[in-house]
Length: 63
View 1 (cartoon, helix red, strand yellow):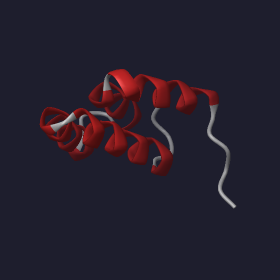
View 2: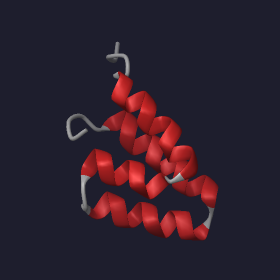
View 3: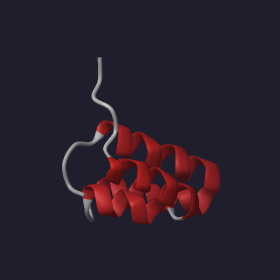
C-alpha cells in the first residue's frame, strides 16, 4: 500500500491543473522531466497535466 500524499503534494496537484511545468519544476527541479513537461504542455494542456500528476505521484523528496 502506498503512502498518502502530503499536503504539499495536494497543493502541487492543484497547481498542475493551471501550470503543469511549474509543479514539475517545484517537485523535480530543472531535470529532464521539467523539459518533457514543457514540451507536452505546448502540445496540449491535458498531456502536460497528466504528466505532471504522474511525476508528483511517483516522486519523493524535493518540495
